[in-house]
Image (cartoon, rainbow, N blue to C red; front, side):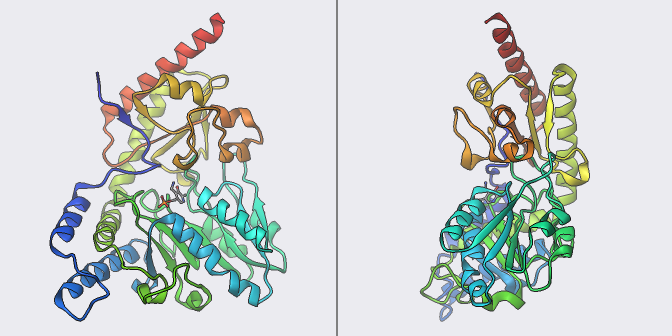
Length: 390
Ligand code: PMP
């Protein structure tokens, strides 16, 4: 028996031991409620949260007070999308633009928002997964008040040209980006990415704890965003509920590590991806790579592939010791899985039934990549042989 290999960093990353150490210390020693700043226990907890806010803000080059901590990217996306609705209604803007390749935590709220009387346009991507500025511009109407475009696609790794998209938006439109997968996988700073007004962040995609995330809210639109949770005055009144000090401290440490180690992380992942592809391509002549082919526009840590005729369902069954995903974790089923992202990119169901996402990261070794490639080649060849014999 050999250990299974983890190739699902896109779903969640392992906790970095340095993050664990900070959380452990915080849990053992600083259990106070950060809202209770009237005594030293509360103040120590508040100090952790203050530091974390600074670390997360620095990671995307944002002002410290613009970060609101949440329970994760799903909540941040919901907060951005539902929080702005009353404001949009008040100025008579009832149209929203997003893309067909967003994560479900954007598409789900959009479906609900449509039920509440707004219209939503879903821009279809190019075959590489990219949505360009002129494609977004074509969807804008005089009623458009809000545009939401992800930073980096979680399934195929395509990077969206946010600065280009921002440049085509008429003044006054609120621009949101779900950067849950972008931070740590590219140089995602507000300046680099067209200064979105709202940015969604997640801790467990950058080696931090689960159940933790943040929403960056540009100071000039803060008054237009309503909280999802009302009650006590935590997070500057933007989110009621006692802040989870240890999760915050862990997220802060994880963000600081991204800030310090991004270049090294990216170089390592690019080398692993190159090795992975070289092994696969050398033996699988029909291999198709989903996503952008230019390294400047794709994540270094995601490889989304398919071989025509082999379904992801067959591969999941054939590869019990390889942890990978038929698309994103939130959509993963073991049978008959069709990715909405690949379907939008190709306009067909079959490629979406065949594609698999392999994602790796900071703790992946070359040996694991070589073993994983051998396992995939072996599984594909076995399936092809069985299909030939049938
Ligand atoms: N957005 C994207 C692009 C994601 O990949 C994910 C996680 N799969 C989420 C949002 C949701 O993140 P969380 O688990 O922090 O709620």
